[in-house]
Image (cartoon, rainbow, N blue to C red; front, side, top):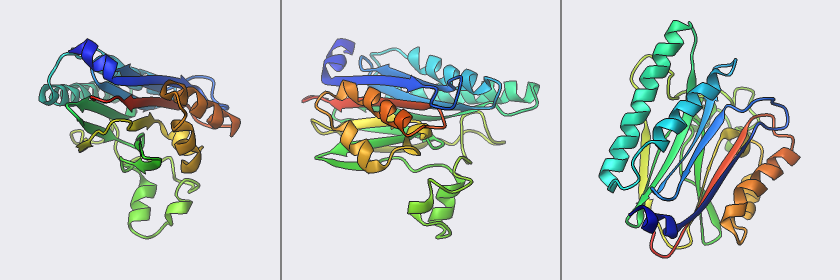
Length: 245
């Protein structure tokens, strides 16, 4: 199954500390063999964010590649919950929060499932139209929903970096949102950290994601973000569905 899945997708990922950071707290997963991709954006300071996102990456990287759709979905959820508990325990020991956002894409049998917590995003490009699949778990998104902030002002809001949900954060158990839909041949997906989505306008994201070779999109997107002096770590994973995804 893994070889068949790998031939149905063309994907690539890239991450960079950004124009103003010296270390990178983002991580990503690029597993076309398993129909599994992810981006995690760590937080906590003193390299704790790097530990958090790395634990998510390693947990997802260890999932067997030949699981059917239902088991793969359950395995991803279970491993994220285990990382959540481990991060909360470590944070309590150090009297702080060690956490990470996450967005995961799973594709099986002509359908996809997306799981996420935080403000790392999944976009889908279909027939030249870019759609944001995920909805940010952030304070500014709540303000937009309440009509207190205009959508066009959200990215520049002074509290735009405040997230309301993350792996390793919160007093209660981890709540992970999910959405599902069909995958059509030629669909392109972009998983990215907020360092990218807060730096590039959606029109530029759409243009760069649509380049003829999807595997070049992450490099081009990150180069564009760095050209705009991205102040945060930037990560992008691009996935193109083949004829029989």
